[in-house]
Amino acid sequence: MSGKVTKVSGPLVVAEGLEDANVSDVVRVGSQRLIGEILNMTGDSASIQVYEETSGLGPGVEVETTGYPLSVELGPGMLDGIYDGIQRPLTEIREMAGHTISRGIDVPALNRSKFWEFVPTAEVGDRVAAGDIIGTVQETSAISHKIMVPIGVSGTIASIQAGSYTVADTVCLVKGDDGENHKLTLMQKWPVRKNRPYVKKYVPDKPLNSGQRVIDTLFPIAKGGTAAVPGPFGSGKTVVQHQLAKWSDVDVVVYIGCGERGNEMTDVLMEFPELKDPRNGEPLMKRTVLIANTSDMPVAAREASIYTGITIAEYFRDMGYDVAVIADSTSRWAEALREMSGRLEEMPGEEGYPAYLASRLAQFYERAGVVECLGSDERKGSLTAIGAVSPPGGDTSEPVSQATMRIVKVFWGLDSSLAYARHFPAINWLTSYSLYIDGLKNWYDNALGEKFMQNREKTMSILQEEASLQEIVKLVGQDALSLSDRLTLETAKMIREDFLQQNAFVDVDSYSSYERQAILLQIILDYDTLCRAAMEQGAELSKLISIPVREQIGRAKSVPEDEYKEAYRQIAENMKIQINEIAAGGEEL
Picture 1 (spheres, rainbow, N blue to C red):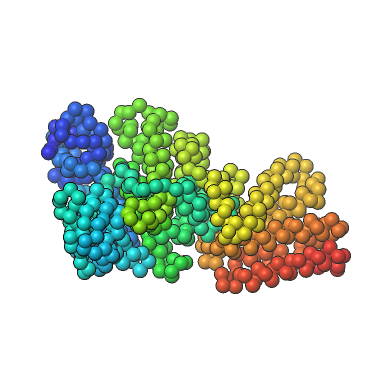
Picture 2 (cartoon, rainbow, N blue to C red; picture 1 turned 90 degrees about the horizontal axis):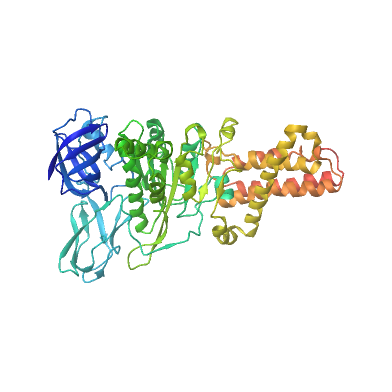
């Protein structure tokens, strides 16, 4: 079915004569067959957002509808790949058309010529239903791709055979309960705006280990949780997201570069193949899918890129894997929504954003969670959603930040003053929060002991007390404080500089295990406890804060991973000896 263009306004095209088309149908526009999606219908007139440059289009150009919604291809070949916002494979396009994507180019998302070794796990005569695993393909050295029965198919396996197949070849024949024969391939399609179904959703109860001390210890996120990273320009949002993508203990990472600068995506592409997964020593790209829709690419496709990424993530979640979706940034996605809304002449909401901004954000974040997947084996999978927010001028009172904060349960607020002071990650411990603390307490108590959560609370108390004392110091100077308060400032300084501060570009300090974090924090808090006990015996504060072990504590972050336990034990022993000597009236050190 086809119609004719009557109006072109940037990425918005209006066409008439499409009375049998539906909202969300994919269309092809003009002789170059530019890809677009119907946003709304009025009679036989359709408003279409085109995902490519529309210059040269004019009234009278033919529009052809495909009759299908915008969908992604799900199957072997996605990992270690890079796609644009509508799942076009950029590597293959470059090989075909050079470094510039030519308009209307149509390349399938999954390689149709590559052969995959299929190993069946089901047999002829087995009854199967949606979500059941019928076999596996070793997609990369890090991930075994589980081939699942598509949604809507159930019946008895009539034939299934091991061998080498392309994603389009039939690997299994299912005689359906409806009497039809269903040919199953290694690939399936799914509409990006429709949530993939599951059996049951659970409350997240396990933390996502990111290796970042300020996150894991103070503001943890659960696997299957949601988090936002808002902050002004230059505060380190992208580096925080890169760190989460590199080190999080998930099976698969879907990284969406949505509207940010192209060179930031280049950094990801340059770094990830060089980095080793800390769990298996394989390159990180072996478990990563990259969606690149940077600021120099079509604005309309930004809006689709978020949905493309989270649909791919849901597919891996349905295999029973832990998946993280990292979106950089949802502000640029919201700006794309605002532009399309303006061109559609919709009633604007606050700051020109569409009135449905909050509901669209909620639809994205609420696709996260820990679920029991479809299938007879009762497997569980998790999807964690982490979105960067780039508020203009760092003003988090703007609509995107506020709408995001109402939805997510972890808020890592980046602070420009910390960034200017070269304190990274620049997560402000006074404005950030995590609502998963209570739900994760049992896991922390079992894995690290009850002392860990007690130390976390004590640390937060010291940092908050420091903020109050700094206000007094600004007015009357540090000499007006009691010795106890001055020690609090020293301890807080150690927590900030020796624990929370972390260098993403130093291999030893880039990642820190839970056990290492717990021991290092315990040393700093023990220092505070021992010094207070020594001061009660008459020890001088000036001597306590200048003991030689203070330098060792400051350098503890740079101790290699395989040596830190012995090094930390030695530091703890030296600290006790030196403080006790001062408390006992020993000679000045």
